Length: 245
Image 1: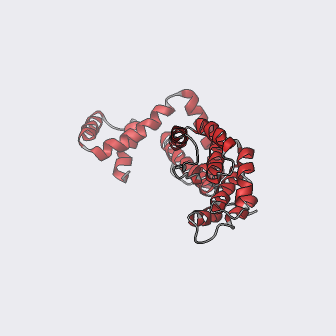
Image 2: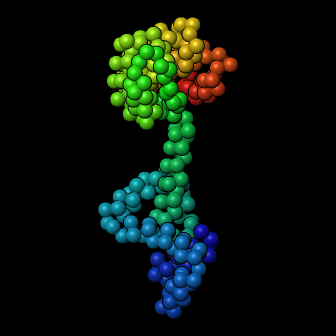
Image 3: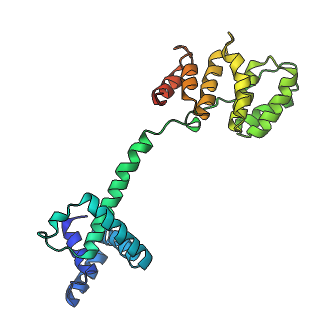
């Protein structure tokens, strides 16, 4: 807001305009979009202050805030500022203070499972199972129907327990359904084995621990993913964001 706008708007809301000046100001409002925008912003505050509970609460809070952030020694020498202008300034100061307090916490908040849960599409190889059943499993998982996918995968794994790819995707479905212990049970033996699915299991094991906020175990799993693996870059990114314990 320009200083010229601010002065005019302050005079308007402080009722310092003459009738002719008020008419001219209202005409300028209709022609100057910048002034109209600044006026609308100020009017929102005025409308709030017009409601007694909100006004009294804000006055009280701003008075307390003022004692903390604005020296009282200025009051005897400074020019008296209208109450509306003081509240307007204090509201802006309060918003800035709140922003300064909240933004660092937001930026420093620990990573979450949802931020890193990227699931590659499921494509099962046919292993003596009805093609329609395989298609149903793939469709359920790839469309995010994890409840159906988990049920179908569990049924499939009853007859194909050595299908490690299916075991991993069953663990992912379990994770999405917050069945964390089930995911750990499925992933742990695969992650410690020598199959081609070992690093993928390590990645999802790390995400499982992340979901539990067990950052130490998550870090340990991530550190075992080799540099030439698909998940390595993501693992390094997550490692940088994990809290130090």
